[in-house]
Image (cartoon, rainbow, N blue to C red; front, side):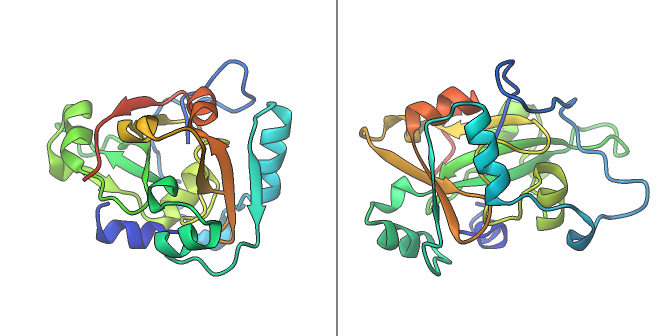
Amino acid sequence: MLSQRQAARHLQGDLAMNRLRIPWCTGTFQPSNSGPARMTDIPMRTPEDLQRFIDENGIEAQLLREIGDTPTVPAAAAALGVEPDRILKTLLFLAQKPGDREAPPAPFVVISHGERRVEKRPLADLHGVGIKRIKLASPDVVLQMLGYPAGGVPPFGHSTAVQVLLDSSIADLDPGFVYAGGGDDRTMLQLTVEELTRVAQPQLIAMSA
């Protein structure tokens, strides 16, 4: 599965739904007063937590466990026998609003094709900021905000609910399964695009190149 750090080289989820048992937040990220959180200090969610979320909310999805060493999108696609565009990545971005450097940045999740570059311009335009104010979150912030480790983040079931954006080209894929992070780097989530959009309730936006 593509890691957050690998995705960053290319620059290169979920809005709360009343029927989903997930917490709500104000949509801003406030670092802990005790200083930067370290990955070892934060309880890490696992595929078991994601499976529980799937079961409790009646989601039509399946976790594929121990698929082998798949550090890249082509490797994951080969292991699953699918086209690379059906491998999705879930990334956390931060938008820093202008005018107040002390204000916490607004977090948002981006779901895109794993092998395509995420363009920052559409993200910046959507949030009304310049491109330089859109940043990819660090692995520590990903874990603190979403509960899952970078490289295994699922598109929903996060520890904090934030805005979710879905690359509009994903909705144009032919019928069939897509595959996203399954809670760790050895597990993948299999589901349809229709089910993904039903659960994550994302905003569609053209963002990949």
